[in-house]
Image (tube, rainbow, N blue to C red; front, side, top):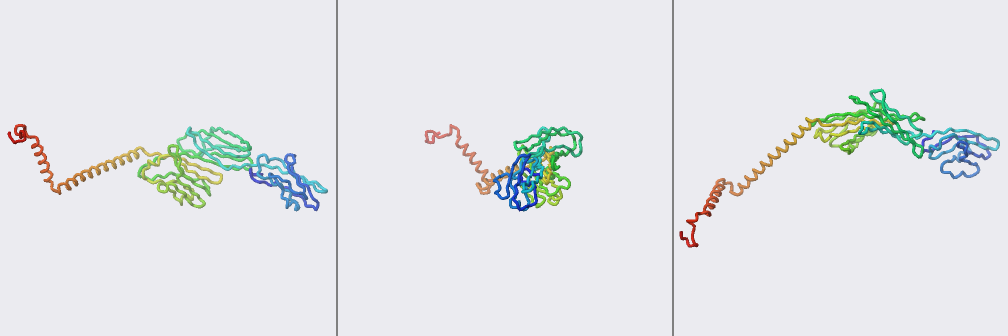
Length: 363
C-alpha cells in the first residue's frame, strides 16, 4: 500500500554474487526501469534503486511521489550469470481521508462532503437518537488526477426534540472512518442573567481543539479557540465570553457570556470540537425574550428621562447664578430695575397735549 503523493518502496531481494547482475522492473509487463550493477544508474526522477545496497542483495525500487497511475502489478527480474529470479508486487495506492465537513443550508437540508480521496469512499448518514429511514442524495466525481470528491445532501427529520445528524465517510482499502456530526438547538436569553451556551464533546474524545464562532446578519466572528493538549485559550472576546478551563479539559466546552445587554448577544453560536477523525458541531440560535427586550427599552427610556431632568435642573441653576452675579445677591434690585424700566417706558410715551412744542417748553 502506498500513500498518494508520498514516496513508496517496492521490495525485491536476491542472493548476492560476485558477478554483476542486471535488475529490471516491469509494471503490467511493461519495462519501466533497468540497471546493470557495473554501470551508472539511469537518470530517472520518478524512480530509483538503492545502488549502494545492490551488492548486498537489495533490488528494491523507490517510487517517488506516487500517484493513482502508480498502482498495479509489478515484476522484479534479477538476471545473474547462472540464474534468473522473478518476484511480484501488487501495489495499491490510497489517498486517505484528511478532512470532512458538515453544514446546514438555509433550506433546512444538511450537506456533508470530503475531497481528494482514492479509491472512491463510502458515505453514510445516521442520527442520534435513531429516526429510521433517512432521505439523502450522494454524488461522486473524480478530478484530472483520479482523486474522488463525495458530496451528500440529507433532508432533515421533522422532530420537536433536538437530533444529532452524523455523516460517516469510510475508505475502502484501510477501512479508515471519519465522522462529522451536527446538532442544532435554540435558547432564550434574559437581560440581567448570565448566558451559558452548552456544548459537550463526544465521549472519549482526546487531544481536541475547541472553537467558538458567532454569526449575525451573515457576518462571522471568532470568539475563542481552546487546545486541550496545551490548555491554552486564544480569546477574542475577553471582556464578554469565557470558558471554565477545568470543565473544558474534560470535554465541557460551554460558553459563558456576561449579563450586560444580552440583546447584543442574539445570533447563532457555533461550537466545534475537532479531533482525530472526528468533527462535532453544535449550533445554538440565541434570542432575547420579548419581556426582557421591553425591560431593557424601559430601562433605556428611564435613563433618558433622568438625563432630561438633570439637564433642566442645570439650566435653572445657570439662570439663578446669572441673576446672582448681576444683582449682587439682592433680589429687590431686580424688582426695582423692572419697575424703573416700566416707568421709563411710560415717560417716553407722554400724551401729545403735554409734550414740549417747538422745543421751547410751551404747552
